[in-house]
Length: 69
Image 1 (cartoon, one colour):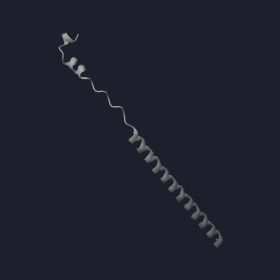
Image 2 (image 1 turned 180 degrees about the horizontal axis):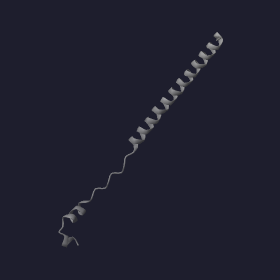
Image 3 (image 1 turned 120 degrees about the vertical axis):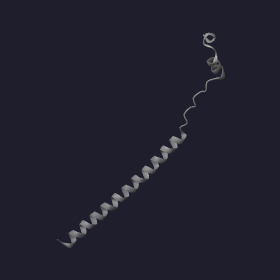
Image 4 (image 1 turned 45 degrees about the horizontal axis):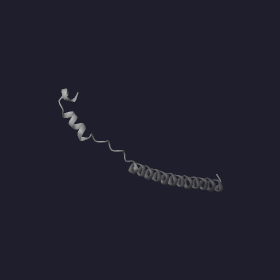
């Protein structure tokens, strides 16, 4: 094997590892961004509170059945 071939192979491998490392960093940054957006949406999502039954409705429930009819 020639020394030149070995160095070319090593150089190609080094460049590939470096390129993949940058892609991993970009993907990690994207995951962090998406997680923060998800948390913002979750924090901004306030479901409407369920309306509480009025006192009049509760009083009707307490009436004897023959009077409520």
